[in-house]
Image (cartoon, rainbow, N blue to C red; front, side, top):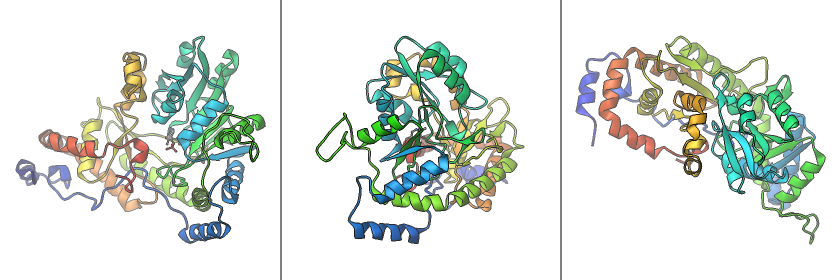
Length: 432
Ligand SMILES: *Cc1c(COP(=O)(O)O)cnc(C)c1O
């Protein structure tokens, strides 16, 4: 079907320059969440050329060792173990910590937090959140502990630290292991201390869509030397010598080309954060006065990477709901995303295992229905941010017309959102 004559007719009576009302989309190309930040290409190519000269492509080469050292210094820990991606890093950390039975995790996270447990037959037990911070609620963690519970994995959602003190107190008192999925939190601090050194270990993702990337990659950071040693063995099939295998293991090594990307990315880390910070402030100014629209607030007394622009829509106060605003943005070629919709407990296999889980996850369900992410990063200049804010403003001002147009276009929009329904971390232009 080409065009929608009724929508175009409506547009003739509307002053709003909105694609949903028949105007041209504001962006010529799709604008993605998590479009990769790329550092200095010449620096990268120089490192890769040196790598070819050495003929050392992987197996803990000099570039990955250098990256480990630089990351450990940056986050202020004794040990950094670089891995091929964040999910394998989580799996290996879980294994090296000896977790089994049940492990408590938030339901409001990327699905990999739960999969890393389920993949090794450990049951993720989903905990509700504090709706103010979007972080796992320690008071509710305590209620979920059973004789089978062996650990807690906190997630620093959006790079905002979860309640580290309360979780640490519970873990110590109940004899549980505590780790953190810090996939969002590279470059973030808690009470002046960088994320990376809390709990037994913390796990980073350096995936292409995270603000700092090594194409694919990740790392486990820890101050426990024994634990780090176990991670290194498990990362490399358990090899402790040329012909000696001391442990069960897998292959979690980071390749040299990935480490080269990381070394370049570290050079531009501060400038990327600066762009993210600028965009974040422009979004807060540009959206702050819209009714029922709030922008998730970072604590600026701490270090932040500002990599996510998290918008929460209060359906009681905003004339359009979250799904309608996502529809408006998609029509403008802005691939705003519902995060972490619908919650991990509503994804397979967890949905079948625990069909009633939602009953214990009231806040998660409520927040997951209200949150959407907007693009940011080096792809977006101040003019781009202003356009993104103006789209929401126009849509809210013309909410009645917008709703009518959306209802008319519902089948089309559903099709386009299905087409872009890749996992949240895979939403970059390069893959979809
Ligand atoms: C991205 C992400 C992961 C997975 O990391 P990969 O490097 O993509 O495997 C795990 N947990 C969270 C919270 C994430 O956002």
